[in-house]
Image (tube, rainbow, N blue to C red; front, side, top):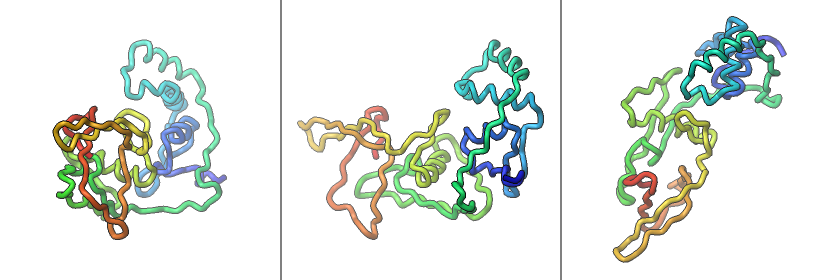
Length: 218
C-alpha cells in the first residue's frame, strides 16, 4: 500500500481507527482538500496513546496522579498498529449528502396531536460545509442524529458511545377514559414510518407517555 493510500479522510474513520493512525504516526486527511494532519512528535503520540488506554478520562476530571501518569507515558514508545482496511477491496466512492427530511424526530419539532401532524422537517445542503447555529435545545444534535440514524441505525448521546435506535425501553400507554389503568409496554427510540404513498395509517392515534420524560410524547 502506497503512502498516499495511507492518508484516510477524517470522515472515513471511527474513533478507534483515528486514534490508532495518529498514535502510529500516520497522517489523517482533513478538510475539503484532504490535507494531511499528523502528530509531529513521538511525545505527542505517546500522550495520545495514554488517553486511548484511559478513555474514561476523555470526559472525566484529570487529577494530579493522572498528570503524573501522562508525563510518565512520554517515556513509553507509542505502538504502531496495522492499517485497518474498511473497503474489503472495493474501490472507495465519495458520496455527498444533498438533503434530509425528518418527521417527529427528537427535537426537530413538536409532536403535536395525531390529527394535527407538523410538516416534515427538511434541510438542503448546498455547500461543502454546513454550519449549525442555535441555542441549547434548538435541535442541532437532533439533525446530526437524524442523519447518523438514517445511515447507521445508531443514535448519538453526549459523552457516551453511540447506541442502537432499536434498543427497547419501558413506555406507558395513557388510559383513554377515566377508570382505565395505564398500560406499560416496550418501545424503541426511533420507529421507521411507512411511505405514505404506499401505506397510509388508519384509525385514531394513541398517546404514549414516557415515565422517564414526563410531558413528552412520541
